[in-house]
Length: 145
Image (tube, rainbow, N blue to C red; front, side, top):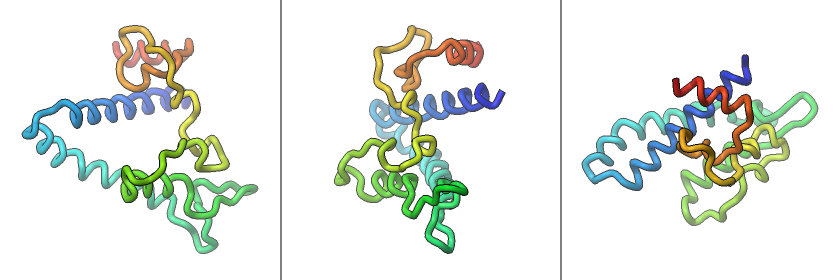
C-alpha cells in the first residue's frame, strides 16, 4: 500500500511540475503574473520546508540523509541541488542528481530520470517518459479514472 500511495504522490508532483513548466513556456504575460503570484509563495515555502529537514546537526551531518551506519556531511545533495537551481542558476555546471549523494535512495530514482520513448497516449507529462511497469500502469489507470 505504501508503494501505491508513494507512486500516486510522485505522479501528482511530476504532473504539477509539468503543468507549471508548460505555463512558464506558453502562457501570456498576464497569466504568468497570476501564476507567479499564486505559485511562487507555495514553491518557496516548499523549498524552505525541505531544506529545514536537511539542516546540518551539531556535528555537521544531514539528519535526513544520514543513517546509523553512514553519516552524510553537509552540504547534502538536497542543499547542493538547491544551491545549483536557486543561487547559481544557469551558471552552475549541470550535474546528474543521482551522482551528488553516495546513497542513491536519497536521490531521484533512476527509473524516474530515464529518458525513454513516450508511453501510451493516455499518459502525459514527465512521468510518461518513465517506463511503465504493470503495477505503475494499474496505478496510473486508477488515478485517471
